[in-house]
Length: 375
Image 1: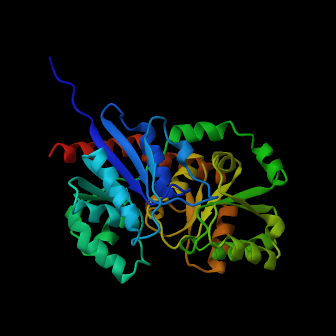
Image 2: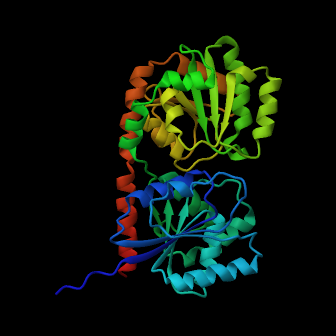
C-alpha cells in the first residue's frame, strides 16, 4: 500500500493584515492553494487598533497567529515568534515586506527552516541600512520572489544580489469572479449612493493614502481638469496618513463636491463597476493588485510609469501614461482619457487582465514550494 504523501508545512509571515496589495495577494493565493498538499499557517507580526483588516477574507480553516511586535527591539515578540515557528516546524517560511523578511531571516540563523522572501516593489526610498540588511541577509533566503521582472532587476541591483537568487512570480487575481461580480452591479444605484448624476462619469483611485502613492498630485491634477469637465467625479478608496492633507487640499481647490473619500472599502467591485477608468499617480509600484482588479472589471488605466504598469498598459488601447509627476501632466492624461474610445479600451482592459489569473500565480508558487521542500 502506498503511503500518503506528507503535506508540506508552510508558514506565511507578513507585517500586518491591514488592507493592502501584499495582503490581498495572500488572500487570493490561499483561496486557491491545494490544501491537500500544503498545511498553511498565517502569522501577522503587528496589530493596529481601530483599523480595518482583511482577516475576514481568508478561507476557513487557516490558522492565524497575531503577534504584537512594536519594532525590531521588541525582544518578547521575537521570543514569541521563535517559539511559534519551533512549534509549527515548517518546511518553508514565506515572508512578505522588509520588516517580516528581516525578522524571518534572522530567526533562520537559530531555527532550521527554508526561507522564501518576497519583494513587492521598487523601493527607491530604502535607507542605506535597509539595503545593507537585505544584502547581508540575502544568503539566508533560499529564493527571493519578485512580483515582476522590473522588481527583480531593481532589487538585484539595489541589494547587490545575483539574479540567480530570484524567481519572478507575477501577482494574480480571480479575473472571472471579479468580472462576474462587476457585471451584475447596478451602476446607477452606486451613483445614487454617491449623489452623482446618472449621466456623470466616475474616476476611481484605490490605494493607501501615503507618500508612495503621491495622492496630493492626484488632487491637484483632477482639480485642474474638472474646471472644464464638470461632469466628472473622483472617488478615492483607501486610507492613510495623508488623508487629512488631501481633504484640506480638496477644500482649498474648491472641488469638495467632486471628490468622494470612501476610506477602506471591502466590496471594491461595486465602485469599479460604476467607474469609467482608474487613475494612479504612484511614485513606485511592483505589480499593482488594484490595477489588475480594475482591468478585470473592464476599467482602462491612467497611470504613472512604474514597475508593473509598464507591462499592463498599451497606450491608446487600454489606457494612457501620465508623462510627468506634475498637475499639468495629470490634467493632460485625464483629457486624453476623456477623448478615448472607451468601449474598445474596456474590452482590451479585460483581455490584459486574463493574463494574470490567480490560478497561474498559485500554480507557480506551488511548484516553487514543492521543488524546495523536496530538496
